[in-house]
Amino acid sequence: MRRVLLTGAAGDIGGRLRKLLKPIYPELRLSDMKTPADLAPDEPFMAADLARLEDVEKIVEGVEGIIHLGGFSVEGPWETILQSNIIGCYNLFEAARRKGIKRIVFASSNHAIGFYPRTHPIGVDVTVRPDSRYGVSKAFGEALGAMYADKYGLRVLCLRIGNVADRPVDKRRLSIWISPEDLAQLVRIGLEHPELNYEIFYGASLNERSWWDNSRAYAYGYRPEGRAEDHRDAALAASAKGAPDPVGDFFQGGPFCSAEFTGEASRVWK
Ligand code: 15L
Image (tube, rainbow, N blue to C red; front, side, top):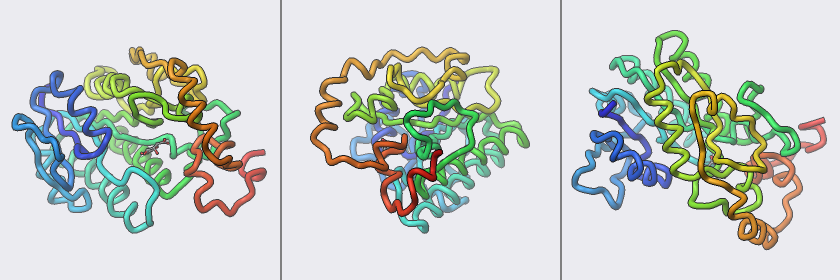
């Protein structure tokens, strides 16, 4: 595979993946609403608003696979989530179908399952429990991916990404961190593995404190190298400085769960 489209190229994860994947996919096409500040002369870029299907049809034209990071990457007002992550995600899958693109790696998020307690390890086959409108949009993208795989024969990998950073920055991230290199490894499985039809993997490195069973990813050859525990002391020290958050500290989604929370934590999980 040579011709790959990366949406959300101006974002933080997009910036990291661009650099790691360029040597592997020489014709990596980048897209976002705005041009990445550090765009190099050999990086083809096409601006697009994902909420406009005609824009999306142009950016997907002629590629073999798509890495879809585009959209709004945290909690936001419904109208923003609707345009960027619901309509935008639909347009991406639909444009890919119309243009005959066969592979999509969709950046889902841990916030699709954020209301599982940290005491309750989960695999990828659990009922979604989104912790935010953002998390709902990621669950929507996973469902959309399943439909396009099963009905139209696209090959789709959804990555429930934890937190991408050079190192885990706090206690919660010791459980959900993924190094950029490990994420690139998962993306490559999604674009290249010959047997993949539709799968959900957790986007997590080798984290001793993980809450997730990522055996599906391992079955497809994922061999993470990042070890969250190597950064334990600094991460725990950072958390010790923060204010306690009884709801956020109980659930996997952390502050996404406690934001706007007016429910009863004891009823969410019995
Ligand atoms: C996400 O899905 C966000 O995109 C990212 O900004 C982080 O907040 C991350 O989750 C997280 O849970 O740490």
